[in-house]
Amino acid sequence: MSAKTFFIKLLRYTLCLAAGLAAFAACGYTDYRLWPLDLPASAHRRVPTTAVANQQLVVPFTPGVPVAEVASFNDQLEAFLRFEYLRGREARAGHDTSHMLLTAVNTKKGPHYNIFIVTNNDLLAAVPQLTDLEGRNLIAHYELETWSEKELSYYQQESHTFDVAYDLPTEQKLETINSSKLLPALAQFLIFKSQTDNRVVGGSQDAPRPLTREQATQLASDILDVAHFYDLPLDYFMGVGAMENDYMDVNGDLAHAVWKKRAQRGDIVLRRTRKRVMVSDYAMGTWQITRETLRAAHQLYLHDKRGYSQLPPRLRPPRVLDLNNVNDAVLTTYAGLLLRDLLDYFGGNVEKAIGAYNGGVRTPNPDYASGVKNVADYARRILEHASAQDDANTDAKSSDKPQPTTPCVSPSPAPGNAPGAKNCVTPGAPNLSADDAQNPPPQPKPPYRRDD
Image (cartoon, rainbow, N blue to C red; front, side, top):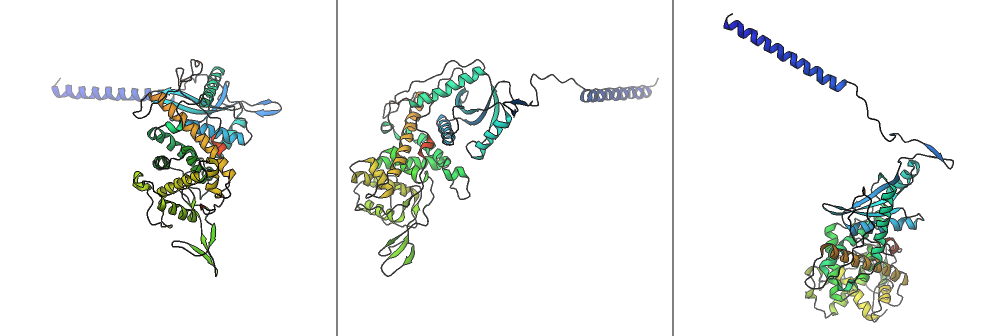
């Protein structure tokens, strides 16, 4: 056999072998993809079965305890504020809130907080309940889960521990906490109040925009600087901001107007008579200071002997007031100056000073003062516990003020299959909920004058 014939036969056999292997592989792949397989039997029914209980049709969806996760957070203060807000709104609607639970789980990245609602084991009841909360913008989503009875007992105790821990008084009071420690918690509180404003939750087209993190941090810094400069009670100063506009920069009372003898520079004249003029007196910005009140505040500033160089430049009022171009940061200074002057006028009586901030010194508004006090009490409790929690977590030592620690309250050992069995966090929920400090209907404020 010649070499040429041998190589031709070798090539032919090689091609036949390759074609056979390819055909075998194709048949094997096709057999693997199309051969019928046995499905593993499921331990639970995939399709909910219906039943009749108390002469009503029910659709149970779990053999265990039905729950729904409705919110998840990495920050304890944010989780607590949302938890209290949700419970407060549901309590006002006459609903049972004992089935709402706040839990904490330790992860590699730190504690993680979840809000759960224990629902009925009936899709026909659970889904409408959760959908209603979504429709009212109280929750953003929900995810149904199943717990065992042991898990439910543990998480109920853990949620109760949050309530107990935040009821305990803290060693360090608001007046002694330095500003650097207060700033993050105060910024988070401002964001929360702006996000839960009735106009924002209602979702109307003209609703103001909630504060961003950057805006809240800057405003919190301004509030701390002004409160320190005028020696104001921080909790009540925050209460005024919450009652006025929930810390959002939006003008209000746009139709409000006042009569005066003559127009002044910057006035928006609406009507004239032979002896008087009607000018617009809408309320401006975060603190809802009316235009006429702002004139009075500016006069107080011009006669004030305090060293305003101690304030950051952005908070210093100008020497000449331009009513139609007022920086919102400067309004924070004017608001602090007004409150300081009222406190001096009433000899340090906070309730009268706060009432006069809205109703004038002749007729202080007690309802307004009560609302501010509710927010002030709530804000104080929140900030004190947030700072104590920060101390307990970081165990850091402040260079200018000592930082007491808060005992870490831990519930009983978690069930073996429950995450966070070794958790030890400082949870909480104050007596006064965020929803207890709802703003009353806005009332037009008279111009502030010392001689009223």
